[in-house]
Image 1 (cartoon, rainbow, N blue to C red):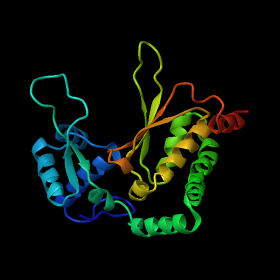
Image 2 (cartoon, one colour):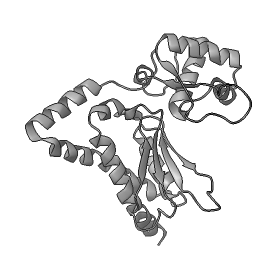
Image 3 (spheres, rainbow, N blue to C red):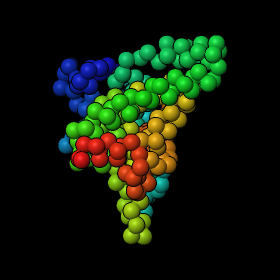
Length: 243
């Protein structure tokens, strides 16, 4: 199955168009049940099932067991559907093999520290994007600014506000439904580590990666604790704009 690399929109028949809408929802919104997909895309459950079956035959979609069993109703909880690596490849240019070979060579001739330095330099896009977005979006929270930065760089990021725990703020989750370097990061986790460290520095607080696409999860998830807008670069930029 092929996708338009620029718009992620279909260019073939109506049937193929709907199928790509299903695939794109799995990319942007993460793993979902067939019922959730049907509701989100305003399709019948039968139509969604037909397209999921077709995507599964193409090895673009796979079924997963939910992490926690539902307490509602009887019987087993509904299965989740998620894009496979092959399915994700349809949304991106595949330079992964070349990138992996280049990093292997760098590691061999200059050592692991050189790979680490490369990862840190690459993660500089986060601060560069912050400088641009924070200057014009003073009403956004620090996590929302970061989500915009990641989305602008191909990560399809969003922010999820966590429910209160015993009446106390539990913070937010930065969710990246797509990772353009996921395949490379499988072998070189330094890429993920550098991003996490950059986020922590910019927010001025410790953050925790809960899941990564590179490790087989459907979404890269980073927990941002409450009160993270205190001493980091994000707050400094916002203060400079508002003063």
